[in-house]
Length: 463
Image (tube, one colour):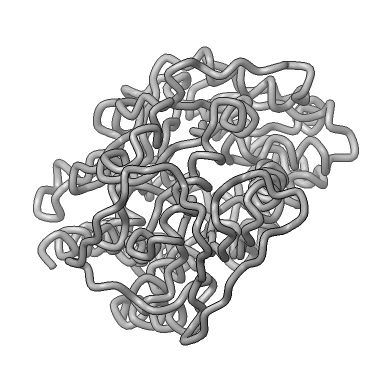
């Protein structure tokens, strides 16, 4: 039954192509790239079976031939960096005379499935700012490794310390990182104060946190705003993390070894118990991530788990932003509360299709280099993390109190663990991520869901 659900999910994804671009390139095709600076000859870009020449635009200062470049990123919606992304690529458009076809979208499991489907159908973009973990595994052969690009363009990513960036499953680096991430617990301090509950800190245990949530519920306050329908991954990570440690958090266990996968079962069981205690919104199984976030911003829930990217929109959207702060998700077992989920998990990638078109290749390389200069990275990374060889310096006056609170929290972390979900292919997550309603209702046990998920992971590695 669950495999049928997976097929339906992927079929729906195939039905909606959100990335610009057309045609596909054989996975084993190779085209040598010239080790030269951007070309100055006239160029055309292809759209379907037509060719379109971009005429130089007023204000163009680059010798690069104007082209149409299709770009996808997850900088969209209320993401704090969405505006920075748009400003940066518009500056590149003005400099080069090129046109960016931006198909950015907020990342969730549906969007990830669509990205994969677009690569399968040959509709991938020229450049994408995307996750470098398991989410990209199925189309690595349609991406160009950073090392290959650097043979033709030595300055490409030369300002980055790529040792800070986890390699993809085949050992290559494909993405040039801009900003890293941390995840934490956003708190409405006023609701807690009104209920006589202390703000969790580095010494708060998981047991104490659950008791505080129960107290909030008794006083008519929704303890935790979260969508168990479309955005479970934050609590998925921390609940499992509480049964593992920094070194083992992102290790994918075997479905055949119960001792190995038991922490995952225990973590999801904790989520089920949180649901049974009524710690999530009443409509947690039908609301989406946007609704969960807005519920918190509107002051109708005490806690909300998210990443550094959420700080700006929460601060700007709240009627009384001074009532909000960021702290650690309380820990349990071998995990200290100050051990957090953080790292570098995304970057700008150039597709093989773009690389094999000489004109588009030049533009794609120039675009990524323009979007990953030290100055641009400093703006994007802000209060998160970066992989620059020369660490970015931030002007604290440019950031709000909630962002700085998060920065302070992350800077005092005792351990940084990469997200477990980054090693699980999108389609393999379905038994857990898309099946929480069945899990919390008892229709499917946490162990059954975990074993099926891990079995799909194992099968994906043998395909």
